[in-house]
Image (tube, rainbow, N blue to C red):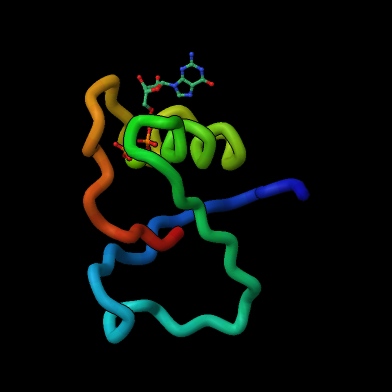
Length: 65
Ligand SMILES: Nc1nc2c(ncn2[C@@H]2O[C@H](COP(=O)(O)OP(=O)(O)OP(=O)(O)O)[C@@H](O)[C@H]2O)c(=O)[nH]1
Ligand SMILES: [Mg+2]
């Protein structure tokens, strides 16, 4: 898969806030600090689209791109 463009859509904390799309969705879940956000940046070929941190607990919301 080649990702040509990417944009931040919104953050959510509950299903009623999730954006509605007809596209397939890929979810990233895992232990804190394991590298989820870094992996998303790598896949999107971006350095800082998603905030990363050496300290656990950086990503607190469900972020849609
Ligand atoms: N050695 C190594 N470190 C990595 C790798 N991927 C990410 N890191 C580091 O691991 C730390 C946490 O990365 P994040 O991408 O913020 O992890 P996360 O899973 O999103 O963390 P939370 O948002 O806290 O849940 C950062 O210091 C990254 O630089 C990797 O493949 N190898
Ligand atoms: Mg994160």
